[in-house]
Length: 437
Image 1 (cartoon, helix red, strand yellow):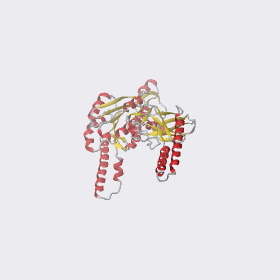
Image 2 (tube, one colour; image 1 turned 120 degrees about the vertical axis):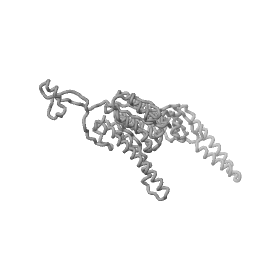
Image 3 (tube, one colour; image 1 turned 90 degrees about the vertical axis):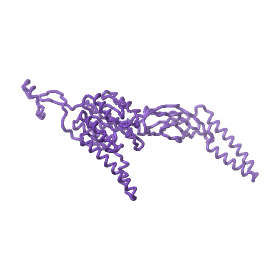
Image 4 (cartoon, one colour; image 1 turned 120 degrees about the horizontal axis):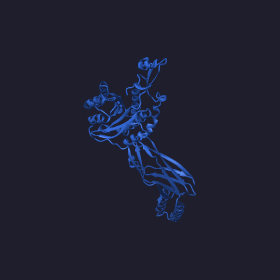
């Protein structure tokens, strides 16, 4: 049983009247009458609220899984079984990861009314989120007593990489929509060399593909026909070293990389390629062999679901050894990492150059948009000038790193974390259009 605010207000007024009756005796019988009336009203409100065993029915509706970094809806279903209207305070025990200890809202239901309501939660890290009980506090018609109803005990929801973002970008797999949302409209250049069949020559066929041996046998011109090469292995390779711990807007660089790799894998599968996954730091972490089976995206998502970054120094030598042992044919390796200064990049450059001899390597590094904003602000003091100079140097170093990698034949993406998914898809489409894999 919980006492309502109106009861406390009545008791406060009653105490004041009793206090004043010490000097004005005529107030004493009024205070007694007021106290008896308050007691009677309290008893009536108590009997109305506790007179029905199941006065309120409630249920929480959770999705099968949450999407990391996105708004996820939690549904609440409530029914009023009383014969009078009630004011309800809904208090849900949401997971500790959200750090909200005063979460709740008020809803009013007429007699016999049922209503659906909902609220939004935005998780900022992957893993298991434990919900507690759903508590509903029903106030009586007089507002003097409240009764607590508890529903739905402990429930667990897994927070996966952003599959909502993956669905938003899924349309990019279809050629008719590639020009929208800021995507580049690319001209197909070159051609694939995957042989399809030999057909008789017709006007308009490329004469460079004439097959003279087949023509000699058949007595008429024959030409080789080729089709666009598909089912190429593409790997999302995620650095789990300490450089990926840097946070931006609540998410770490690792989370941005994971969300982008899920989007990229989905688009690759939709385009007929084989999508795979690998993680590394000072050791090789969870991997998923490239494949295009129907359950491949689910396998990639499960591999990404609970990986965490630590504090070890990233060893690209381990990645090179793994690639030489496990990857036979030429693959596209999309490596999500971060180099804060050119010295760190140069230490790993020999391994990246070695990888690029056997595979198409695309290195994704992150641009610190906070430094960009800071460097554009006007300065007034000497200390601000020094800080702006340092920020500008960091920005300049990042661009030099990207140019240095490009100079050695290594494809590079340098972009803010928020634009990562779009930039990786653009680059993948460009690579496919140029027939580089």
